[in-house]
Image 1 (cartoon, helix red, strand yellow):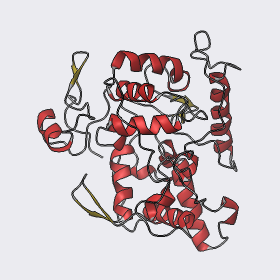
Image 2 (cartoon, rainbow, N blue to C red):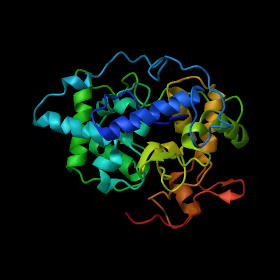
Image 3 (tube, rainbow, N blue to C red):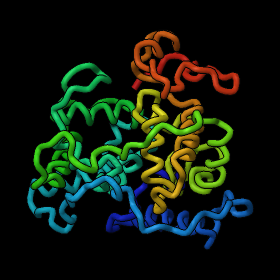
Image 4 (cartoon, helix red, strand yellow):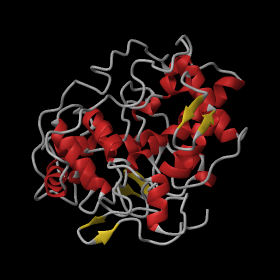
Amino acid sequence: MTTSFFSAARAVTDEAGLRRTLSLLACGLSALGLMATAAHAADAPSAPPKSEINAAVGTGAKFTPPPESSIPNDEFGKMVRLGRDIMLDTPKYAKAYVGNTLSCVNCHTDAGRMAGSAPLWAAYVSYPAYRSKNKKVNTYEERLQGCFMYSQNGKAPPLGSETLIALQSYSYWMAKGLPVDEKAAGRGYPNLPEPAQAPDYVRGQKVYEAKCIVCHAANGEGQYVNGETVFPPLWGSKSFNWGAGMGSYKNAAKFIYANMPYGMSYSLTPQEAWDVAYFMDAHERPQDPRWQGTVAATRAKFHDSKFSLYGTKVNGKLLGDIGAPKPR
């Protein structure tokens, strides 16, 4: 899960982007044993050789979104570029709606372009659609609102706001030429069969220490340069909240297997992906904003799944027992 969720494929046009990309490359080199991070130089384990395989392999996706160089130089193009920038640095470009240090690209790699990494072009042509999460038909804008509420641990931008229009414009521009089809190849994350052995905390911890710690740090807090997130936190107060899709260790396992360690897609075994996803989700994080007054009531209404550890005890700790969510 090494650089979890980050994209290095974007052409860098500003100082912050350059710093972010150089840091990403540094961590990738560290994982390959060519250099070491300051925090774990002494005991960082060796990683397998970098693979040319990416998340799109095996998805059957044949659609390729247009290159950034083809974004038009007009008012619509300005909105498309803003959407791309929000994807890449959400705390900067959508600050009013973000409550943690994550960016959209953390779960939608390559600026939302990569098949098998929940690409925005495939999502765009899948809406409106019914979602069991909120038990109603959602528009694409409403789906984006959920990302801010849960994955960003923030608040929903108003419908019709510049933030949502920009993200919708960017998604639309990428999806041009793709038929409206809710089963577009490459959508979401590739399916991952349930493991032969039940996911295990101890095994997951070993995978984390061997493959993930070099970038995400010992306590899952991520890494920062001059206050800017370089590698995202996987749990704790700066990460996604309990209502996020990654709060299901099934979803997390699918993402990890296809995308992590960064640059080494499908290098983990399916069992390792399940185990390390379980380990990640077995840690505390911000409260689910749909809080029902008690952990038990919140689990019963929103987390009644074997893939959610919310409201269960892990190592003697009742996960989610942190009180009401903080106001946004």
